[in-house]
Length: 257
Image (tube, rainbow, N blue to C red; front, side):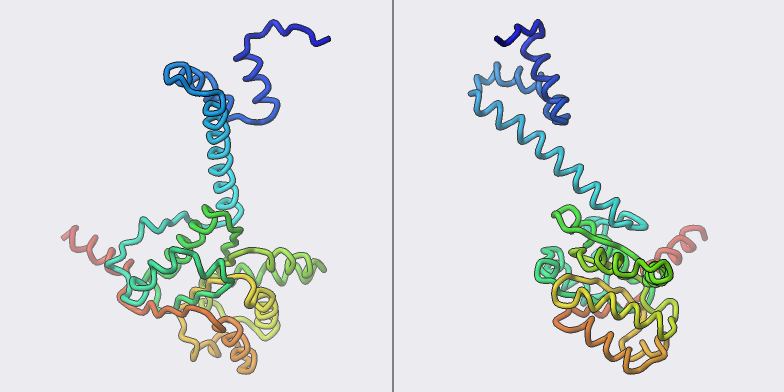
């Protein structure tokens, strides 16, 4: 025989929610029940509202976890882009890129051009948007990725890193071309990027046109293979233009005169 619980129905429901880790439902329970009485809601409507509150809270929490796990150096959003300042090709491509269809299809995106034109901002903003829509994302600079790969190799954990790297829905490799790498480093980079070919998306930002990649990778054959692997069915956007950061600096100097 069930014992009579001296707690009120609200207290019992609150306790049950906490035990089930339904914290958002717990917090909204009292107010929702008041609204239900005032609006004469059905039991099903009350339950639906409470569950939707919990689901929304969990969705937001999951988005935040994915964004933290992605390791973005800074949080930059699509809404923060000053679109009229972007190079014309990037400005025209943004509406399509924002749909993240290229991520769903496992296609690559290459943003190339001189520094300060918004490549990293766009890559980061697309990565955050992907996190918000349920995709797993990793942001890394190419120098950092090379360090990770070399350390994993020295610790005999390369296969573990490869397995993780391969499974991300989107990997953002920033600053390709800022630091040169030897043949071994280039081979390791090629092998990791090859794991994702035609199955998962990779965004690469670089200040070098493909014709200049041999300046940072000494092996011409490897350069050609890497370019071929990255650009196959990829969206390639020329972001050469006036540096946005330079324009900001010039404006600051002008304001101080």
